[in-house]
Length: 545
Image 1 (tube, rainbow, N blue to C red):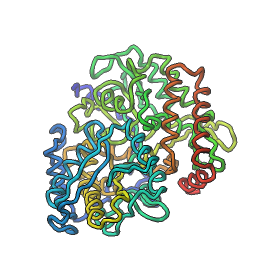
Image 2: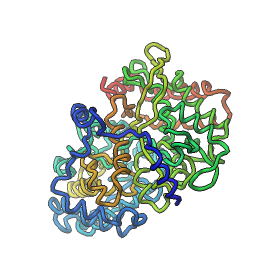
Image 3: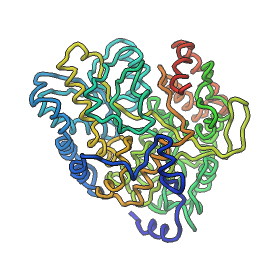
Image 4: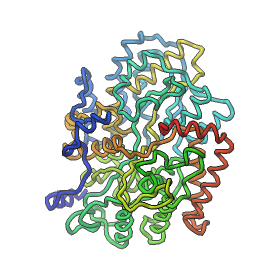
């Protein structure tokens, strides 16, 4: 790793970054918004355990192993032991459905829960799914009434499809106490995780997309220009200008922004959303995906068409790595950006922890963070016109993963308690800090995660962690954040959009507008199938209207 490039760059100039707690808009403003005040967040009486687990294995000591996950799981069993007797669940078997992406998610859960199984006597059977297979598998179980899992790792957007159909078990009060739910950042508090006033979700993640960029591409004399792009217009211009240049770290061809051009089971649509949010999410309008009064799609309005056109232009300019048409978001983050290909990326915030703690990363010393780039103009759907004013809109993509218990256990009190105990162990306050600091598939989501000293003690340097955590906090607390709607069928909308985008990127549609119109027509059909009136009501509720 050519660390000297980074050191030289930082000595020459100070990079432009968005940081939390800067200037007069810091703690007081965030408190007024109900947001995060990072340096004031306290870990409470958990400090000894938190300090101990953050040393496993230690930042810079390589990727954690199953042995490390088991150690962390054992050290954080205290809350379980306060509520469950040893061997209390002997003979209970539970089935857990979740992801195996990048060898994270379920693989970590196995390690965390092995000490829990040994202590309680319960046994867990696992259903592992790739990201692209997740939505089809869940929708099939819902549609056919064949839910074959007791616990599920799931995002809040699916709550309309599950809780709305009565498929989940309501969270017991003792679970809320064990997981210290009041520590969640503001935007993940209820109504997220609830349906009809009942709580169902143990939050284990705080998804929003943040901007990661290579610091060695920007600065005086750098190939990407003197300053980090602030808008999507600048991102696009830099990406085109880098064609034919050499990457300063690897010596391979330089690339700008990394758009994933392959679908990912609906999850890939979030990456077009990043561009579209800056263009389409007007500060005076909470809606940006649909018209809230009619559910008419906005995905083919001029703002969304501009987002699609951006990608078309970069394809035509040859700005992407070879075979980008087959790159899904997992590729852009882990096989490209962290491995040294490309200079800019929008992704969930856990790219930040992976940059410093994953064996697959070579960019840990040359990476910076910010919120979603803005736009020089924003489209006003109310007036049907562009406004020539700067606009920012961080994308609260997916509202984070959670752990839910299904109604399969509702008639068996021992099995029900066991399922909720396992879920609560994964959603505990201390174990959550470890998952935020190390590769897990998750990013910071509790107020207590923003205590910088804890991260420094684990081995992160202060400047890096202020930048990384600041990008998350600034996104969570942004007044014009683009919020994920919790409506039935949301991933049906996203999945069909991916299908149509793939056709557009492959040249099967004649223009960005034609591609967008195909998505809009498909969305109208989905809305009619689900029921337009009910979708309008739920969409408005999700937007707080």
